[in-house]
Length: 514
Image (cartoon, rainbow, N blue to C red; front, side, top):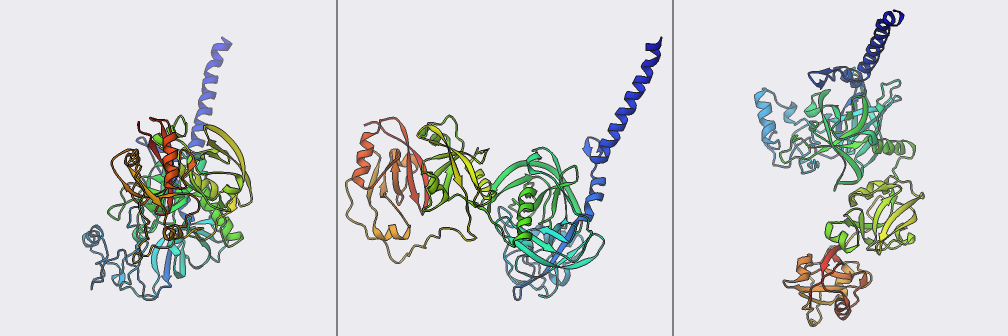
């Protein structure tokens, strides 16, 4: 009887405990409505940390134009058709014929359109983007492109207070800028961790698209570690959150109300949102911000290699089970990679403990290391894995190598052609000194004069390529190339190092039967 009588009490106690946990859980995460999160509480808590940013451009006669078309009397010639329809349907016009946002993502990766000098008054602040309070003593984070070329930056808070901001520093490579306003005790954001973010998780953006302050959009994480040509040192977060002109620099929140990214770019063929948005991981943005605050500039690690993707055919030529890693196509003279003994043809499998599935993952990993730090690097060479230590250098603000433009008025002087290498369908010649000088070529190589149907053409070799090595052996002359080919086993696939327009890369060559 005692045990039976006590059972309801245990059930009641368990029920109370369960309800308490449920109540605690509902406080930290948005409640669910019909299977979807209710973001209202999150938005209410997070909005005071979000700011609107306006600027006055330092460029003479510049105005906030969205496109690159010609001027018109109504100031809308530069606007895309869908935006003009939006204004007409809502009976609105931009003030003074100006368009709301010059930071308009109008390229395949959301690149900014140049300002063509519209009709807007040059001294009037124009709503340009978003940002958020990083530290409570007045530090605001936004995109570099939001404040680029600005002579005055205005930050407006949710409570309508407005401040003229000082640009503490900016970093074009990561598209991050740090601002400072004269205010204390501000509601700073909580920072999340990029490493804990997973594809499929809900995320939310707050910003000022087209000047509509504190607009909220939500979606999910589509992918992590996206590398874009415009910022190869940033492993972007891809989402389907609606990001439009004016969202730039605003925060991307997770369901815990933590900032996990800085909204930066979109992929669009129309100029508007098409379901593919990119955000800078908060870990990257916060590190850049700390460096800008402490030093006024950003330092990045530098390895000094040119790498390419390893496809299935190349993996086979290097004796790899699957196509992973970053294939070293060139090692820059005097670089940390050269000092560490890295060579062209090595495949970097991991860097500083992080495995490389694709070659584009290497630049962000290297850039995130402090110059002077010694880190482990695992690579494959001659079919074996080798681990070495590399002392990382510092990446210059400017590119390490700048290729001279070719002078179209002066063509190379070609020596008499030698006998063709019929086995590969190739005709090669010695590299004229003029071409060697313009291409900054160092070391061996021969110039491809012509390609006919055959193994070389199937491998992707073209007229004008420089063949530098084959099967790991340097090609110093046409005669040496013929000797190397003659020693290769028919039917095998070997790597060929070429230089095309100053860019080195490997190609898989199937050695034909004789």
